[in-house]
Image (cartoon, rainbow, N blue to C red; front, side, top):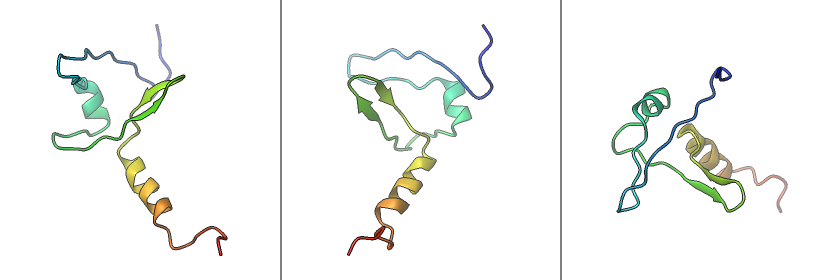
Length: 72
């Protein structure tokens, strides 16, 4: 089965302590290193998402922006 460019799917097994191992190919593609902190987002209907770590800076920039978007 051919997948669209830039789209991937992996499986991971949850261990007894609730830990998962991120596959090496995924760690390489997304530059995930030991000690990195990952954000997990959950939706009971859609599942769990792990956004790219660059999303942290964008999220923080929006949250701590001096521009309050029209708030008084």
